[in-house]
Image: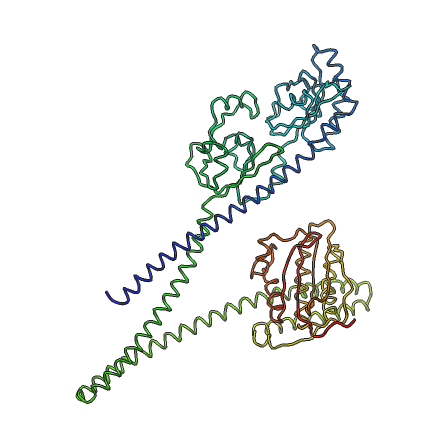
Amino acid sequence: MSSKKQFFYFALLVGSVGAMLIGWLTFIQVQQHLSEKITSDVVQLGNKIDNQLERYSQLPEVLASDPRLLPPLLDAISNRKAAPMVSQYQPVSQLLDQWNQTLGADTLYLIDLAGTTLASSNWQQTDSFVGQNFSYRPYFQQAASGQNGQYFALGARSDKRGYYFSAPVMKEQRVIGVLTIKVDLSLLADIWQYEDIEYAITDELGIIFYSSEPEWLYHSLIPLSEGIRQQVKQSRQYGMVDIGALTEADSLSAFNQQGIQALRRLPEMPAKTYITAQHNMDKAGWYIYGFTPQTKAFEYMGQVLLLFILIYILLCIAVHSWWQTYRARIALANLNSRLEKRVSQRTRRLQETNQQLKITLNQYEHSQAELKQTQDELLQAAKLAMLGELSASINHEINQPLAAIRTYAENGRKLLEKQRYDTVGRNLDEIIQLNELIAEIIARFKVFARKQNLQQTTQRTNAADSVRSALSLMRNALIKQGVILRLEDFPEDMVINIDAVQFEQVLVNLIQNSLQALKEQPEPQIGITLNVDAGQALCRVWDNGPGLSPEQKQQVFDPFYTTKEDGLGLGMTISRRIIDAYQGTISVKDHLGGGAEFTVSLPLTSEITP
């Protein structure tokens, strides 16, 4: 077998083993990451639902103490045989309707001890609860026994999913009726923000009553016994639907312990494997499940394997080229040795030997030329990649002063119409300065492209002046967004080792990111502090926005990572490279008052004098 075939089979064996190992490790890591993400999502959803339901949990008990509810209930006790009319207790129904509009609930209704509704906030609707008997509902039975009640079910009249809160209406320490609030669970659709996973909410039996997948509704996660199915059907909690099972799990606890489950979208369809997570809602007695297809883990694994294969092929080509060159050198050395030993004996074959030597040398030179060409192509590719990154960076950095130039120009036109020539002149001065700033930024990017020159640069910059310059550049954006600046007194003699323009670029990037995070904040605030610690100048920029997640903190300095719809994801990468070039550091953490806090640390070139 030739050496080329041996090398090919060996490389194929090593590559196959490496691909299997990397694929397996990637699959495990991605599956764990997806499981953690789903767990976080369902926990957040559970907390949001608890907060929504908590708004209504205490309201029935508070409203039940209103004395205006007593006359219908006392009348019902004294005249049990007469059925209530829709308009019989109209003032009370109007009162309940007024309360219901204020609370934003679905329905608010008053029930006597026989379970008959006397007054309701929907008394004017065709599906009015007035006259309906709800004595079979557990929430009525709980409240009639003197306790506050909670219960989930489909509405007997409206066929809408709702959560019921009830409280007893008392007179002289005696229960005379029940006040109930029905909350429409359509609010779940408003608070669910995750489109990349499926979710389902079940009761304690595992029956799904709310889901992002319509085919799963009113199915159970586990097979239910015939007795339980009949009991659920008789309670009319979910109407008269026939509850089927989506899995073959032995019990709900066994289902919850498995992170991977095979579910059917419909019982007659093939099962699909999901990565699952579960969260208990102890207050409501529910379970929230999150599902994401396991195929996503395979997609990520395929991408990693493709990248590994490409890199491995390039590595094999490089190793093979080196091996061929090495073999050529060894062959040349052996040939020279044999020629020296046999020169006296083989004079007649000298010409033939020399010809063979020339052929060998030509092959060697050809291999060397191919190797050099390969190296030049790799270097050229690296240069093109860097030029592409720098071009995108320049576009990102000069957009800010260009936007300011446009703002000054538009303001100048309006001021010119008002004949405010002095202010127009100042605007033109600002435009000239911003134009010079753009030129400086472009020049700085040229320096940035040559790392060795950037490292040799030593600048002396007044930190306070740079902060004020950056704030001046962002003044209009801050005012437009209504941001409150929290600035401490800056030490005027703090001199740091960095170029002034580049330091201002870093500050502008940080302020711009804070403005983006504060778009939905009711009272937006940005703070900047300057102080000294252990011979280092510390500049902190914070805001009171939503802050950054752990994943965002890890990726915020990565190239092309952004949370903005129109962002390039280069601002923070460029900022870190600028600070690193001057032996400084930049980091991010949670601000004590909420939001994010970025800290830039740079060496001092002179100590602060007291």
